[in-house]
Image (cartoon, rainbow, N blue to C red):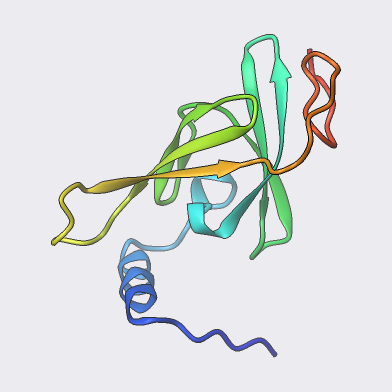
Length: 121
């Protein structure tokens, strides 16, 4: 059994998310803090990010403008994904924050190839 100790900020966030109702399946049910960037593919239409959902032991492909449960994908570049995460804090100066998830490995020299991945072009 795994027991997680939540900080005060985490408890408030968890209550806010629970009050939003049940999370849908798939990409629309993902929380930005629960995913890890696994890879980025270059396609004919731009970049696609592969993310791993830690809580559900699944992976998903994201493209720009995809909606997640607590935000959306703003941009995907060669080595990072930028998210706009909704902030449920009435004292915050903005109702959102920018979250950047980056790949931290050495690049392949093949065009369109991202570490550990291939090209979908």
